[in-house]
Amino acid sequence: MEAPYARLEQVEPGIGRMLAHNPSAFTYFGTQTYLVGEHELAVIDPGPDLPEHLDALEQAIGGRDVIAIMCTHTHRDHSPAARPLADRTGAPIIGCAPLALESVGPRADASFDGDYAPERVLEDGDAVEVDGERIVAVATPGHTSNHLCFAHGDALFSGDHVMGWSTTVVVPPDGDMAAYMQSLDKLRQRDDRVYYPAHGGAVTNPQQYVRHLMGHRMQREKQILRLVAERPRAVPDIVANAYPGLDPRLVTAAGGSVLAHLLDLQRRGLVEQAGDEWTTA
Image (cartoon, rainbow, N blue to C red; front, top):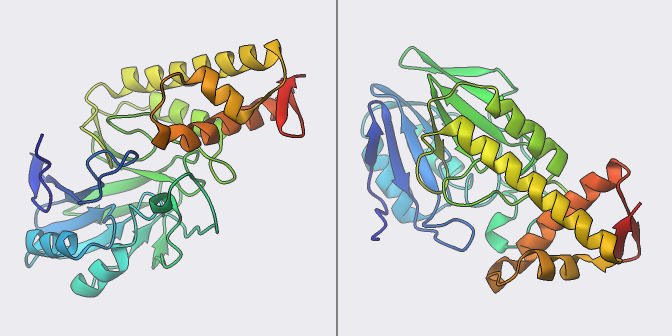
């Protein structure tokens, strides 16, 4: 498939999507930026600071008033374009809280954006009004502690919390499996019609898909418990047995998710750690 980089696609009335040219094993074809509104606009997940992406966004915006530049979280494939786009449009940066850790995640592009500085931080239930319609923040910690989704009518912009092509990476110290599962359950109880994720296609069966994601994580937890019950195991040993044939580029990420499961299980008193090895409690 030829990815439609730097080209605005109208996914439904009042919602446009533009793909940034930052493909990887973790971003699929790249980060998707959404333009929401018609006369006024909100820009959701402006993406990486790539000149061709910013130029295309500026052209797509035209002379319209940008009410807000909104970031779901501050990984470097999501928020670095916020400040240069704000400089070009005069729009305020509104959305998730700043969060910058020295080291998090298995890849360079997932490190946090230390330059992100919003004019306004949205808490759960806070809203921005565009064209007379509200875009409401839905707090969904887990992938990162500052992650927000944004609800607009019956559409939800799900960032990296729910993606359209892969399961979400949850990597300690900031990624938290218990919080991620709670946030999935929060979405399961909503009645959104469609999710527009930052990576991958639209999710048109949201509640069913979220139940699938929750079931997948519960099965992974059972698998990890079974492996450490057999004998004490370090994380790389668990990954080798739980993810046969895994793409080598994803081994570190899988290790992060396994560790997130183990830390959650440890808090619940089901496993314990001795040095680098884990076993059932």
